[in-house]
Amino acid sequence: MQEDPKKVEDVKETKTSPTANSVLAVESKYEEAALNTYNTRKSKFKKFVRNQKGYLYLLPALIVLVIFTFYPLVNTLLLSFREGYDRLIITNPDINAAFNLGIGNFTNVLKGSVDVTWAEWCHDVGMIFAGKTQEVIYISYQAQLFWMALRNTIVIVFLTVIPSVLIALLIAVALNSIKPLQKLFQTIFFLPYLTNTLAIAAVFQIMFQSAGGAASVQGIINNVIEFFGGTQVDWLNGSNYWASVAVVVIYSIWNGLAFKILILMGALQSVNKQCYEAAKIDGTPKRRVLTKITVPLISPMIAYLLVTGFIGAFKEYTAVLGLFSSPGSTAMGNNNFMITIVGYIYQYIDGSYAGEYGIASAASLILLVIIMIFTAINMYVSKKKVHY
Figure 1 (cartoon, rainbow, N blue to C red):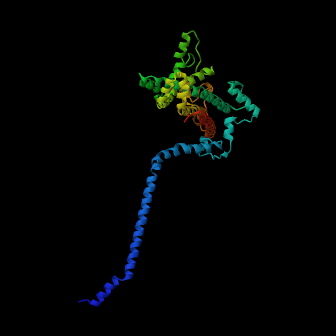
Figure 2 (tube, helix red, strand yellow; figure 1 turned 90 degrees about the horizontal axis):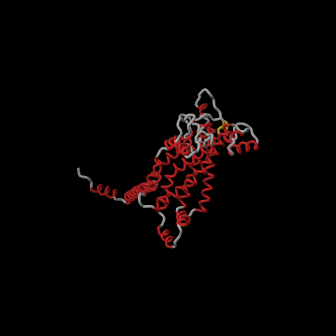
Figure 3 (tube, rainbow, N blue to C red; figure 1 turned 90 degrees about the vertical axis):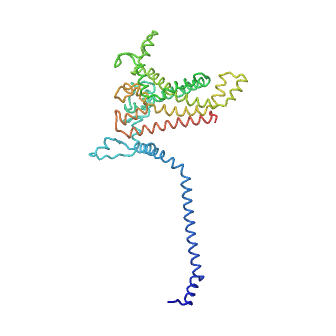
């Protein structure tokens, strides 16, 4: 059947009418706008991801820091204000534990659970710092243990940090000035850094032991002393406090030299050689070259070693434990006479007073405050003395 030409013409006109064209144009514009919006959002997302690559790379380290650093810090802060908190009570389902919030843990650390006056407290703390612990009357044994730990820690800090940096500086300058066998000597001095701390402490314990008691044979140090006509010294058993301190100081300085020498060697090799050439032309003495050229130019590294050295010395634990403890014991010497603050904290975590996390947390925060004070002093002095 043949279609009507007129109807076909009307259909063609309808398809190409202005109304249909405008509708198609609007639809095309909407499609184009939607496509542009999609491409813009996609481009922005890609740009955002590209800009966040640094954070993505840091994400694993941040997760580790949150789990093993920030969470423990916050938890320690909370535990320090929970009075009477005890792990053994918490883990016992038959006991309905309730804890008060307060500063009781800090009070127990500083003066014990007994009531003492300010004068009585000052008397006992003064006796402890004077080394007369037998004259302590008023504060409890736990508080006495903390002040003994603080005294021992401060003694170790001031007798080891600055001398070790000075000795490391002199050795680094000497190594830097020689060419033959320089690498060999660097390797020899760096070996202690690769050795286990407790293993080194065990060797020192054997070297410094005296005959009698648990030791049937005295160490090489006492043998040398007796060879030259002296009498053996009780280095490790507590009868001679300063002899025991000397062992810790010798060990700490020797064990810490390797890292300090390595850092200072790197700093010395970065010093501009023209400074030394100019000093040589002027005939400057070597001592003056060291004090006026070398030390100022590497003072940032010296300041870094001092700051990290003070922090590390305040956290001393494994060396003293290895030197003075007996196998299977957490006591740091007879009656804990060489206990440090970190050792005191461990006594309340897994030692003689295991499970009392509240007191351990309070002592940890006190140690943190002490370290922050000394670090702030170091940073203040560095601004005045360090040449950047």
